[in-house]
Image (cartoon, rainbow, N blue to C red):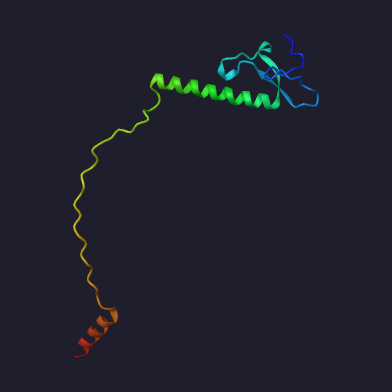
Length: 113
């Protein structure tokens, strides 16, 4: 089939100055063949949009397949009773000790006597 220098996505003629690429009509990731019969010219932006849609379609198909085969985890978390609350004794106030100088002077004073 001849392309007639038209974008196969939007059917607008492709000018020699336009940026264009070759696109797989049926994307390779979606089961298309890498054959000349599956390749058509497309504008750069048209091809970019179609590629994004192809990837989105592939992701959706993969997600559905994973769900049906049981590969994905369930979205809900399993609720449990939790752990029992532990008893914590009340904190006792720490003893406030006098500064070290007082001890040092008491020991030294005691030895002198």
